[in-house]
Length: 298
Ligand code: NAP
Image 1 (tube, rainbow, N blue to C red):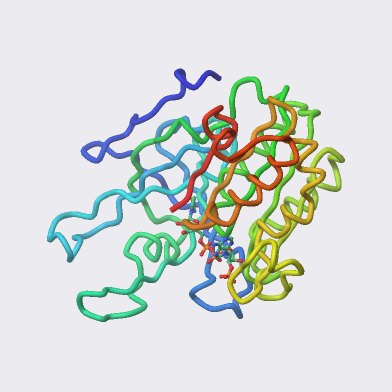
Image 2: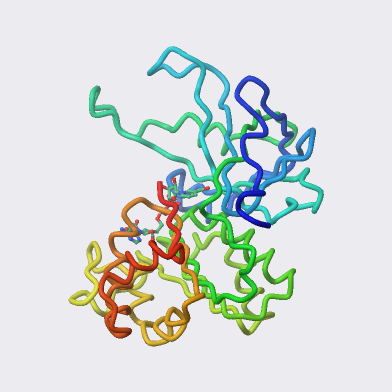
């Protein structure tokens, strides 16, 4: 599908789509507590909701926002389902959501539960949610992706779009190389880990690498500094720089980053280091300018 054909804004705040919760499954170990409570949520929509991996769905939490005394604005979540949804008919849409907690510097209140993410994580089967969107065009795969090697880098719930994309590309018989590099705090918080493991066993052109920040140590902190020498996705990239160099030296190869705001600041220098080997300055900038580096961070 061409980018200009991608549909956006089909459902507005004034006329949202209703979706019934049919699944709300915790993806991380219960013992990790509320702050690592990431969920796979599936909604059965009353009408088709045509969205692509890389797009976002808006969720309207019920009630009023105490900060504005107005109804809550929609919150955007990346779609985790493949093209056509989980059912192929655009009726079953899934999201990957983690409980968010925030601090209010004005009141010094800390650890305030996020209104939308906690609403979503608490939903029960049969509950009805109000959905807007879909939104976003820049993070979808290009129509000619079958001719391109792909590198996907995710932290935490930023994995959502890559789950759908991987389902899409393998269903379509993708034969180029695809790398998925995923960062999580603990091995029992690897979102959709079983799905990716199974895919990488089935498809030899998928390389699945994990960076477990609180259980593995960064072996090269001088070259790739990380907080408390934790193992981050950018360290995995640096360790595999010669293979990534080979992949990214192809002018068609693309790299997608999704997850925590700030991850790009650690990844760009690694990409720039790879670019130097190719005789290019500011490789990350050149990749972005050429539309080959896509970033979705919140
Ligand atoms: P998280 O568990 O807090 O973090 C995931 C991993 O990233 C951890 O291993 C963490 O390490 C590591 N990390 C922290 N800072 C990093 C950095 N600067 N560079 C590289 N890795 C770093 O993640 P989360 O709670 O799931 O949050 C993910 C973020 O993605 C949220 O901000 C969310 O809004 C955003 N997002 C979500 C979606 C969606 O649809 N759900 C889509 C796009 C983006 P340590 O904690 O051990 O330092």
